[in-house]
Length: 307
Image (cartoon, rainbow, N blue to C red; front, side, top):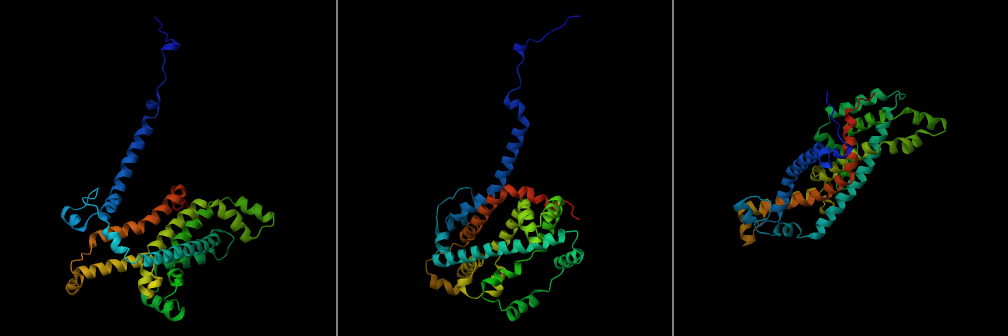
């Protein structure tokens, strides 16, 4: 029987491309999917810089058929008002997110402790509020007549402070933390507040970052509370101000009596809608990019069974 031997010089290990073909294909596929998701956003940006007449005639495209900044000029007619609205929304979002995160995490930490005797009762009460609420009229009477929060910044913050779903998500995550850390801290003389602030919070960064992002989106995109309870223009948040601008643009476009007052001035209604979306989306996109490293890990907190 003849034996064949392969000399060491004739053996060539597979190249980098051959070793990573699967990873390369996966990255290319994910890049294509990402591109498909970004195309609608890019179309919105392109439409916001397109002339209104050209957009109506030729439709949407990846590039402006005729560049025009008339939509942004229309929105920024009163830049002071836009800046004030940005300030109101930024202040409400910052205070509301921090306060909501503190309140929800404190409640979730209490529910996650198995030695808390009222744990099941409070869980039922919180869950009940996810299914039923008092309704719009009782809420309006409570906020305006009893709490006296109309035309205050507090009315944009207080109604959204507690979120039952966020409490349950945080409780689930807190339940997965090792109890040895808490027991060791108790042996060292730490009280409940020190355990919560110095041990639980640092170990829960992914969950807190995910809940923070959801809360930021809620406060930043809210315009309903301003519609109900805010009458002073100086307290308009950004989303409600943009809504009011769009409503005025629609009125000027459709009202026949206003046509004589407008003369030859054309209101870029379609491009104003696109420009409003770009203005409102930019800060939220920045917040998402800042927290995305925790977002994927934090999304799994609902899939872990709690106690």
